[in-house]
Image (tube, rainbow, N blue to C red; front, side, top):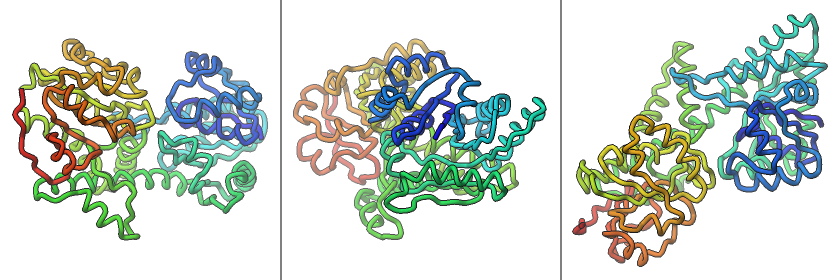
Length: 461
């Protein structure tokens, strides 16, 4: 099939590359000339395991092309995916300017029957708005072309997106029940047939329900995270171990183990934005989503948890203190710094006079960029953050190690070597990577999230 992907960001690149990989002729469009130049030069502007290899082999096979030519892109595809960004507006709602701009371009250059697929995460009712924009563009041209707008939300985890796309647990497709909608449904069924050979994974529903499903899924996962984080903070107060609690409740098949890990808050491009958008959309329909408001509030507070633990142990004035920080990205296997807890922690430490030496396997360049924006009004603070070439280098002469992202490389470090490099054996762990009993046995003062064990404080320099 001939496919066009409008937007060559995270969702668009993964979608385009994976659909090309099963034999489709894919045209990826983006208006960012720098991004297209990188892709045409063999590079990839984001870090996503396995993606570069998929892109390379399909470019070589001629099934995947990248361009800024809007007219050629629209004319190419029988199915056009809108996969542009939908950032949060000031009131928390999804900013649809890029989605609607893509719709205008489609209407401007449409040359026959098209299936337009909303792949971007968009509020309920967006498909209707997209249809209205295209209709107006066609009317302005004095032309009529049959088309249908479909909702096909993505359920990709950053760091495992290629695997998620090629082995989906479900494919949600929302179609209208009119003649164009039935024709679109058949096209989408044909497109996704290779992913349904083992068993049927596609869930067909109306367009609004498909749009809603994406938000509901992310809201549920965010709720589980904030729920466990709130319980973890309580566990610290009463001397319980949240890891034992997690195993205890996760063994109930009605609950399960997924997304029950306590930590220093969620971030990324999806959960924070989608929860805010769902809250705002509900308010526009005179409904208050009280649980989701609490989920968002708990998460923002949780990003301060590591700072609070550090201040409780070392005092509010951290002038002259140096902290090793492991992990900058909001989660492992990505360089995404959007809403990353590390940004909140770093700003808090620098504001208290500390120095920070940070290490992340892939996110350092992106961290430099976003932290320069975060701290553009405080150049003196920005000057007190440096970046290490490896985890061990970050530890040198540090007063403590702070762990923010659970990269695999951090899970089994050389603790003896760590103790030699640090000024004092002190760890603040925002991801609960280690066992408190083990840390006590090897002489490391260990402060985790909800592990409920108050270790004796060591004498610090």
